[in-house]
Image (cartoon, rainbow, N blue to C red; front, side, top):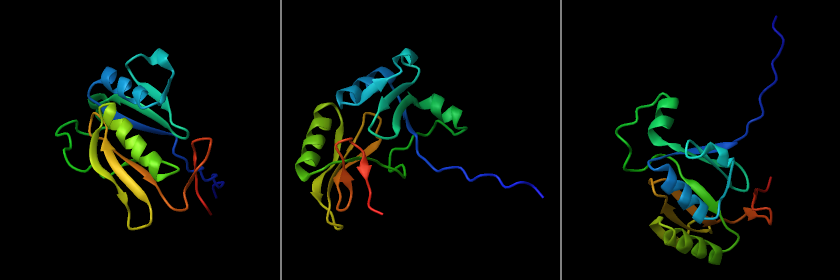
Length: 151
């Protein structure tokens, strides 16, 4: 009889995005206001504080190789995931979308009222990674920039 192993605690710690041009993407995410940390990594990999999990940037082809996935063809359509930037108000959603576009993002969908009572819009970063900018009922964004969910 083997001893029981403890169940790991589930947690999301880092989201890594494959990017085509590290310097350009680092500049973009810094312009959005994400604080870069561990700058000693240069342009090999970039880490940003997000108020929760860490956002990392890594060269697309090297990330695909590291994950043992094909680098080509690169997806042009929906990739099966979005990132989210939760806001405290509809005005914040509008401001974040306009700011992201001013920094070089592409507006995918203008802010609008959602069928679940929220307000959201979408932009893509320089490599087409989609971001939802949203205020959602029942989801609070605290002064600590973290999302607080009810039980």
